[in-house]
Image 1 (cartoon, rainbow, N blue to C red):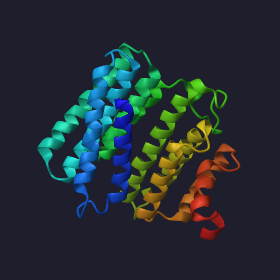
Image 2 (image 1 turned 90 degrees about the vertical axis):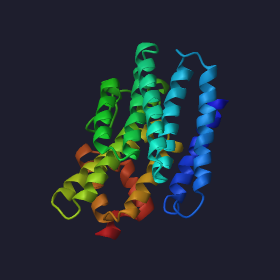
Image 3 (image 1 turned 135 degrees about the horizontal axis):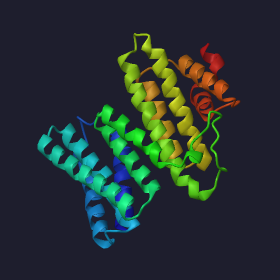
Length: 277
């Protein structure tokens, strides 16, 4: 129950973070900090109840790492750098302990991959892009090759086979992370020739991310989170819609897929490609 409560508080903080990002300097700063501190209290209590070699303990450590990373972000926004660094140390210690437990005691490649994914996203949120790229690349070494999408956007195993769902969930998240990391580069090269190549790469990552999500279910929280994050970023950074459609179409043509999940997403939220020609 404490792990569940911690996840609820963390999810509430995630929603508040996105909602209040532009207004954070004006109001409700204390509410967001109190929310994530409550999450920390709950997760630390949860860890007291689980055996230290159990799956529940490993999952709680991973959740603790995410929570303390968010505490670090709160402290960073307040320019309380000593407390920010302390929270980051707690987050890093928890993620490393979780990785070691997944490898040595649980011997679970899935939990290692999932935890590495969390670590990579942590680097991204702290604006440590190079570390995020390095960590993301390690995830693929832990996933059986027949789980990966082929050049035709098909996995080597049958869809909706439950044992494979956790791997697809992790792959969806790590591909979307790399989409966002590539979009970070896009903004740096906006007026240069690298812009189009990087935007094309970002759309390929997004295509694979949404395809992995679709292997699990048409609608579930990760799909909504991934689509919402991408949609808001496209609007916020004024990325040319016509180019997104163009590169999404090109990638679909190369894979032989009539219409990818990314194309469906772009059409649903921005209208068909013909509107942007």
